[in-house]
Length: 125
Length: 125
DNA sequence: GGTCTTGGTATCCAGACGGTTACCGACCTT
DNA sequence: AAGGTCGGTAACCGTCTGGATACCAAGACC
Image (cartoon, rainbow over all chains, first blue to last red; front, side):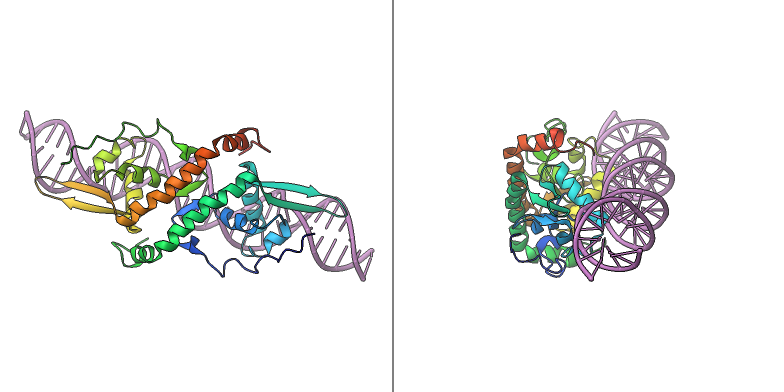
């Protein structure tokens, strides 16, 4: 429909600050899913591309959780053929701000975070 | 030492936005621990008061995790008698800002959050 | 000597979380 | 009719989290 650019081939390549981020949103993949929906609705199969390392079960689970909590909407179009679209709700969209704030924090304190993890008091665990 | 007011008797009474907050920091009790350290160092036994529903094991685990990641420092004083104090590191203190931002977000969207949970698409789970 | 406080540990256990593999019906194309 | 795509589900299983209960050594106090 909209000729938006396709999602990146693999979100795991550009591992963002989230890897050291001590915050977590929803389940394991929820924040990545939200990122993928940032610029408009996406189909299930579209989401599977950047999240290729997430099994269909896990992706469905994550989407269902986001839907249940009102962050994402799921719309089935049976127009010409089956099409399921996931989109951010306004609530879900509003979530992007505090998430970005957390990421900014992580970026600012990146060195300290690395330092604490590696050379800190104890590196066990 | 400092005659700061004691910690509240039970943090679970004044359940803050965190109950609906879709963000999570660290393990289950980490954010509550941080809140308790907000106004200065606290002893293990002090922390146990507001977190009375947290077992010693869980509290220790949470503190160790926070320490490992550089958010909290642990200091043993054997001055007159054994005293172990936990305090926020500068890094840990800097964390309070994005956490507060997340809480503000939750407060702003409180109604929507409740709505989605209860009357939303599906209330299962 | 017995007990209390302090700051924890040891052990066990249930449930949640997440991964693997396989499979499915509906529809479209060839 | 055969095969592909779409949007998933089913069954199984290991790991991790976190709770319950019990216990402990060192020092202070009585």
